[in-house]
Image (tube, rainbow, N blue to C red; front, side, top):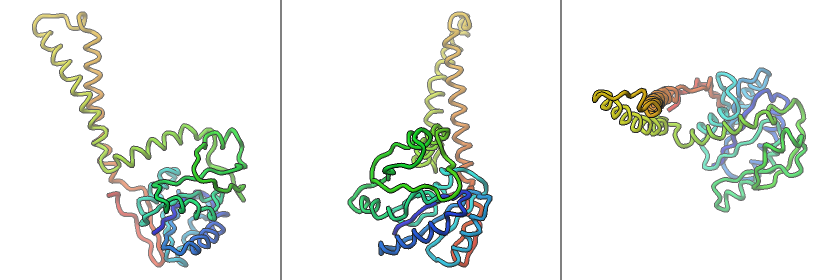
Length: 262
């Protein structure tokens, strides 16, 4: 089973050509598949087009986010809904050619866990788009956008880095954020607590703590406070991870509100 996840934000001119080319490519593969479009709160007619398409194809699913959360959130929502054994993500602006999918899937069939594509002979601006995007696995073709402009450039480099860190965190601790923040909280309180306990003992035995152990007092206080903050952050994460960002999910003949996050 193959799942293709496509985040979309104001890609009205590209949606129908992308769907046509993608379905032609997937039909040739002769394997079960599903296509998941994730509308990241588009303000054009992108969602209307997707809502019409979904009524014509039972293998198509459309997810609509409540607001514009960004590409990482859109991909995360699509991955959560995907049913396939293999998941492929691609852009919704046709700069990723659907015809390159068989080459990527061939690497998965060879036993690789992940196959990523790099765009040979890129036609983007060198500084704004090529420099921040240096990954290398399977060569894929690159085409100019037929309409609109890129939503990502050099200014997005730091945000993409943060997104990658977010993905790492989500993959490891999405359903158990306390396991991450709790470790930091335990480290902080385990160090800060004994330090302050020792200083309290010294204070009660007649020592001038502020003058004799000022730096140690500051370090112990900061460690204990940081530990408490980490524990609190973990608890908040446990609550927030149960709040889902999807407005609705559409399949053929059905439109349903999104379930809460598990």
